[in-house]
Length: 112
Image (cartoon, rainbow, N blue to C red; front, side):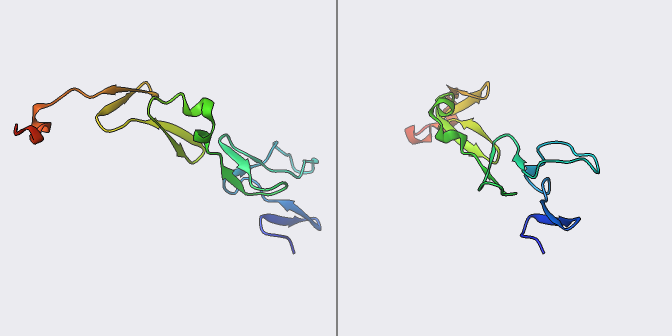
């Protein structure tokens, strides 16, 4: 019997990489000796050493990444994206520019 995330092969428990986010660190031919570690894809990290579970890295928690976004950094699974405050439009994936004024949007001034 093997722990969750491992499968039995030739009386040994080996990590079952590649079933979700964790991927094998190298391609293995049948019969070749492979390492027994799993690696995570870009934007992910191993949850605990020798685990088969990957956890998302919050790229927005790193100042050098967060400051590339003009307004907001939004963490996404395995990556991040930039966002803009209300009234702005995102251009070139990181820059925010003001949206042009449309008179119909200024109903608070009595203009409809």
